[in-house]
Length: 197
Image (cartoon, rainbow, N blue to C red; front, top):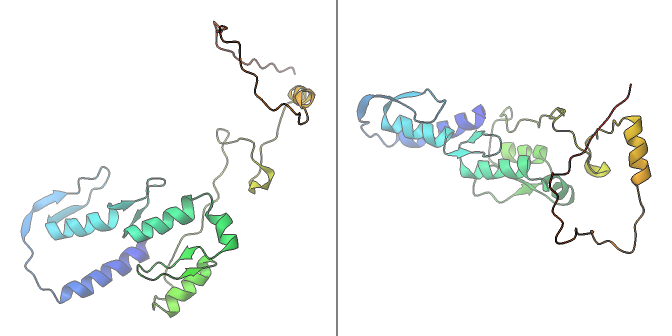
């Protein structure tokens, strides 16, 4: 994050050096975004801060990006469930430079492109590796075996026996039975679990 912000900031500074404009000073004021305590004495400083840190925020993970283009790439690569599947079949990693239409097989290929074609520094931190989310008790749910994530399959022996006895094979009639139209349960159905030690 910091390298991208720094790079875009330096680009902005280089272009604004040629434009020498008087900056109007105002009394100090704070950023109005909740949790941000940055203080400003110029409107330009505030606008730059807001545009780089608060304008393009990921609604999923709350990370901020210096441009809408980088935000779109982030959402696609980090929060789109089909991205990894598609990336195995075709080039999906977009160039980070807005206006460049190149796509790559991997983030490493993209980094090589950015260094050689767009002259980014080789030590530039392009993206953070994805963190493997630890599975909490609340998050555990059975998943497809091909999904690549471990399943929580721990079941009490008595529950396993009941589950085995309820398994059925495919049948010709796949309709879901509907309740009779005039039968309304007085008490919501509740599952009871018992365990014996």
